[in-house]
Amino acid sequence: MKKIISIILLAVFPMFAMAGDKEDKIRQLMEAQGIISMFESQLEMGKVQSEKAGKQMMDQLLSQIKPNEEFQARFTAAFNNYMDKVTAPWGTEEIVSVWGQYYGQHFTEKELDSLVEFYTSPIGQKEVKASKSALTEFTAHFQNLGEPIFQKATQEYIQELKLVAKECNCQK
Image (tube, rainbow, N blue to C red; front, side, top):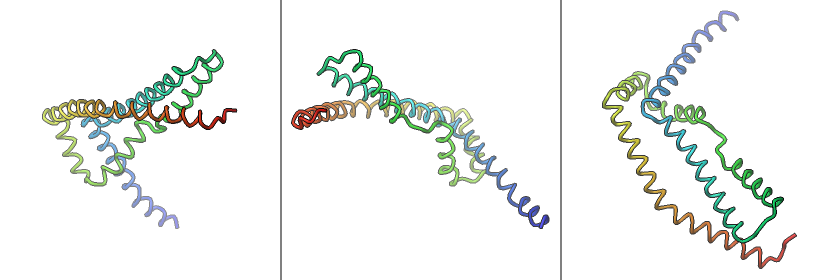
């Protein structure tokens, strides 16, 4: 029995070691490609956009009423509750791990070595900088296009809610 367990452990242990090596190579590649910092930026951007949307809705509502300090505090608490709910519950480490699972399955360790070698070379780093610059401009372009659409939809939504609430006459 001990012999069988030893054989199984000897057969399985190298696979765990190889998995760790592959994960390390994927992380190195992601760092060289600037993907980790990109994911971190996306998480932060999502938080900022959610905060902006929440504040806009609050400002729109507050422009119609004049709450006293107690209700101002309740509105602030509601905003904080909203932010807690819309903030992504995952962080960079989980994103890196999941990316590694989906991305890594397409490459052997030797191929990953070649990719790391390329992306850490001068031309690879130039490609990363160009991609990062283009992505920033690309993202800003579509955010600028989408902003008026989002603003209009939010204002219409708030107006519709107010109309329904007024017609409902169902305040407590």
